[in-house]
Length: 384
Image (cartoon, rainbow, N blue to C red; front, side, top):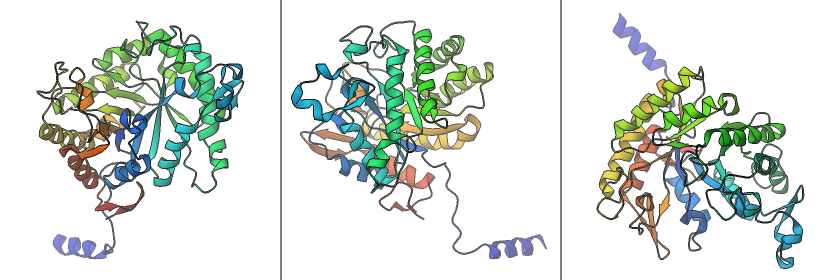
């Protein structure tokens, strides 16, 4: 009788029913930095098309404050450049590169996560230092408010581009890896950084109350850095925790995130989601003079990528994981003293792109987890 009932229930399911995806929308992401934005030989729209075709749902990349606002006042802008800049409360602002990225992502419905950092000289505590914290958190916050007014709901960018289906940016990541002095020169970082997040949150929420603040990705012993942020009063200043669990073994990613979750529970903050805003194994094994411990051959890189994404998909409910970004989309694979220059899914040299085995691994894993045969020009359109 049970067998007959089961057969009847199976027969009642429409033939067109689609199996649900194994991961939520925007789970599979990549980081786009370095060559993607700053190599003149890169065809940016073509790269976005390739992302869609390979199952990328979301892109994380830097919005460079120092590039957008290099001058504090229009008096400092060379006269022949002034038409490039807009007035943001008296601060000249160049949105050209960011507009280009937002256009490309909106056209293809790739969810964009801006990671905003790098203080211009006029706003840096230590002018001329890449890793300098802002001298005044409110100046950075003013820039975040300007970005939200342009790219958030009802923003000026969408008004100026009615030909685009509006895809407002609702998630903003504040800085990158402030626990490292290579990104935040003044250590200990926590009090300074929490002040920056607090000011940014206020500015962003004043424009878009529904926006979400993403904590800077924390690397290495991220659980210790996270606890420092909580002790500095940061609990109520962010909506999503972010981590960079670089490790030699795939299982180490889960171990790191479990330790992060333990700290979140300790501070009664376990309901917040976490995002992995950088995950990587480089293909630098035997090719660099510096080693960080996660170097692999190209085949090993591909194998670990697939295994890690499948593992995180399996544990995403238990660990409350919303997104996972591979570092990185493009790399040059040339620097012998920096293994992360070998992290890309593609290699670019002299304008020539070469797909590495990790690209195939990403595509196959993404399509499997999304239960998708192919993407049809848009990250949210799946042929099943």
